[in-house]
Length: 117
Length: 112
Image 1 (tube, each protein chain N blue to C red):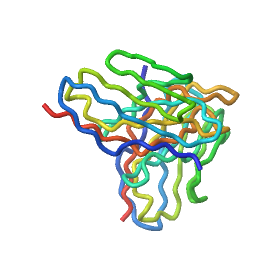
Image 2: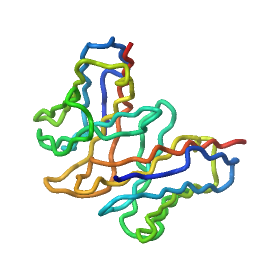
Image 3: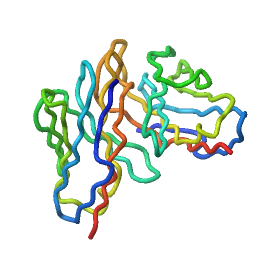
Image 4: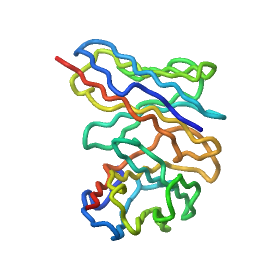
């Protein structure tokens, strides 16, 4: 069974540009979450999608957005990039349910490492 | 606010036992997960404790005490390949499966 695939793995952008990152979850998984990982702040939740709907959103500015497609693939976009947006962006998938369940296992991709110059 | 605290670094020797502690402050806590992440790699799930007590998976065990807001990960018979960062995580109150709060991580260095 293929794991979570994230593209691109590495990218370099300059301040003010925008970036789109892609995530393909494990086949059959309907929930996709995005996390930002930095040395100072650790792993921070960005948002979660389930069945094309944003189910939760973390404490990030509106420059960070995402969406999920009918095949569960997800994209996140960061507009007007700032130096502080340099980070590893991780996507995680899980089977998900239509309700709210807690805990359990998330399957992470290897991330997209964004450097903003 | 909600937070999980864990030591930033731990060093141990091959073959030894190491315990990584995690204390949390949340409202409506619903269990503790542990993840391992090697440098440059993806976080991988190790264990989840929904109830108080010990869960054992091979060389790894995890413990939760909800009354003490405390948990730990126990790694036995340490191997060099266990050198990695370990994160405790808990569900956000009112959140869903994919919405977790993570501790800042504990970097474990295993020495020969």
